[in-house]
Image (tube, rainbow, N blue to C red; front, side):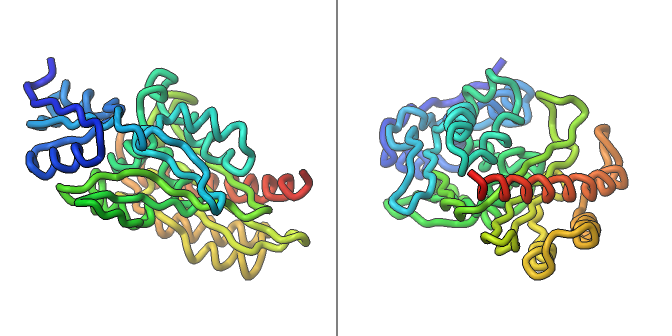
Length: 294
């Protein structure tokens, strides 16, 4: 049974901001609520006030901006992104990440922004969003600011969001013309399971297959997602070889801070990280070359 709470159904951004400003602390904002309601039933979360934002029109928009970037409103569901991105090759990495989350029923309700704001170390969308340079658009008191996702999440279930702010949207820049992406998740089951570790990668090449830029991000490997910037520099300067792959895999493992729990030991996770990083980079590299050939 859910604990008692006050319910506010916001119809505009202004209504939502006024509600959270007046009612904080003890307030939760939701559009899908898939994690929140489970936590409430289990007694892990007991908010006094719930503000429902899913009926605010602009938060349901999935659109391309004037620069070709992707804007995802806070109420856009994981399923909506999964199906849309699968039809647009520039954004296929987002579709792959999205389909790794929960069941179809969960993806039909849960939102992309919610997955980011819950700030779970094992959130499956977050590594790919960081690898693609995504930013959160934070709205409060009539002003909007942009912040990279990698800076927005500061700890397990912790973000930089202030009590009188909400995330209005996610903004993802258009990938460069010859870019490949990859996301690989290791879990006990193939579907509907939490990541033991995950790895996302993006690689952009030129017409002669030289690497212009790359990003590598680990999930479920530390309290927050880890971007392996040192490895990105190696790829850009030395290219993708068996030697650099091995070097990068060890760098990623050294940077990780995994835990030991019932899903796996710390040492097991470190070994899997080395394998996943190499696989993700090889896959992103191949996808980039295929993009060039299309």
